[in-house]
Length: 377
Ligand SMILES: CC(C)(COP(=O)(O)OP(=O)(O)OC[C@H]1O[C@@H](n2cnc3c(N)ncnc32)[C@H](O)[C@@H]1OP(=O)(O)O)[C@@H](O)C(=O)NCCC(=O)NCCS
Image 1 (cartoon, protein in one colour):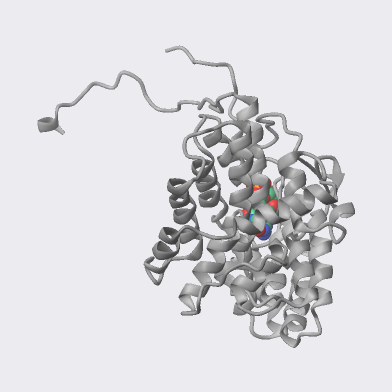
Image 2: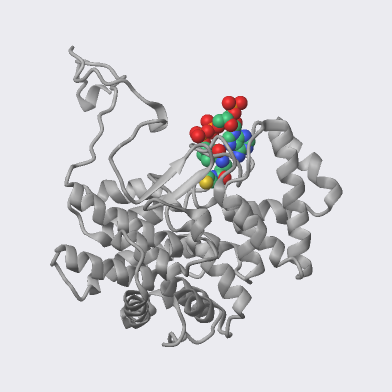
């Protein structure tokens, strides 16, 4: 039997560059760039809409372009009635991420651009998805709370509308500022698993909704975006400050992973962590946030001294979300509502690259095994 290829297996694709991208760069020394801009220079200085524009259009907008983009986003923040009805009919115990995955796929049936797949229509689709994914998340929450689904406000930007449509109250300036920064930090991150999943789907020339559905299903896993919900489970599990050390050491002794720690690429601190930690500190006037922050800080020190690994984006993101009043099962949906801008940018880039992403596998099974008819098995 001959081997098909001389390629060797790279377990988990560690260190493999699957394609070229201009969108973002994850530097293992602890830096992250969007289209060449260091995120440290963007966070707190741009709105999330500017970041979304940057990712999709590959340059920062001028004032006029931003105004036009913002009004396009707000006018896209209405869901077809069928989607709202379907959310209301989803099983009461289903996870919001499962509903989000289903409804993004469902949304593809009502695309006003139909089967036209030009660059122009893909940019329009991308813009609509950036606006509609947060609205699906807000609609799931409001429906489950038996609260009316709210219309977006024309004078609000995307992050403000997201908070308003989710919580039902006017967001304070400090809260929408935190959400802009959170969404900026979560907008893109190289060829992470969900982005890669989206690109694989797009590489077959399948439609953008299919690609984003793949991405959402991939983000959901606890080794990826699902980690922040698990971080909150852990913080909820630890009742007293005195129990922290024993709890964390116990997990490490049992060779368990501490959620919100470690990273495939970074060998230094995840550059997003310092921003999220700072955002949580800014919200520490809330007594609960202060308590959670102290727990997190202690866990960070214990894990570092024992394993020399750092917290990743999901660790302080959990407390940030909690401080904004977001229940833990909505943490990953908020992540998806931010990462959608990176996903659609990558899908468009993948269409332009026009190559099928199709790796090989190393077959380790047998050959020419004698066939046994059913009656003899
Ligand atoms: C993100 C993650 C999947 C990266 O995995 P990876 O690149 O395949 O790295 P590995 O899982 O092989 O880990 C390498 C080493 O670090 C340890 N490690 C990595 N993350 C760890 C964690 N969260 N807790 C404890 N140990 C961890 C591993 O046990 C392993 O140690 P060893 O060499 O002594 O066996 C992994 O760090 C993880 O599972 N983290 C927890 C989930 C999480 O927070 N995900 C969000 C990522 S942004």
